[in-house]
Picture 1 (tube, one colour):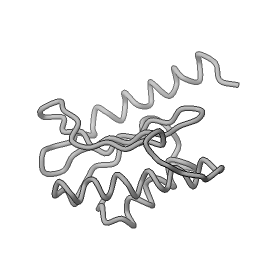
Picture 2 (picture 1 turned 180 degrees about the horizontal axis):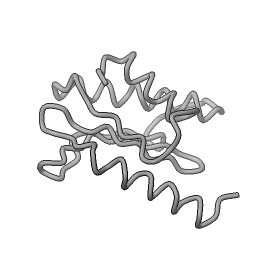
Picture 3 (picture 1 turned 135 degrees about the vertical axis):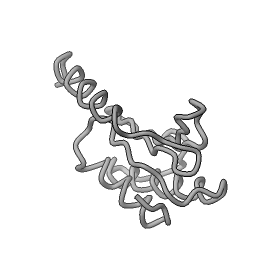
Picture 4 (picture 1 turned 90 degrees about the vertical axis):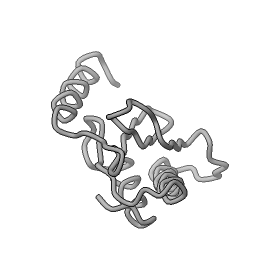
Length: 117
């Protein structure tokens, strides 16, 4: 069960990382948000403050039961969307989450899809 201290600690870790991680027009930031049921990924240009591309488990027509496999599919979709707009390199922002489980599956799938980070 999550409580306000768990989310506050994640928020503090995320703020600390965001001081150093910046997404530029030639190398946008791949930001990950993980909820209890879904996972979301965005390519963000921090210079303009705009989202370039996005993917989420809500937009998938998946019959998978395991959230890790769904996260891997989201990683493949965000890599495909990045290729369409001509982005090859990104900066990975794990959003204060551990690089484990669904976040790791999304990142590895995005790498397999051709993104470099």
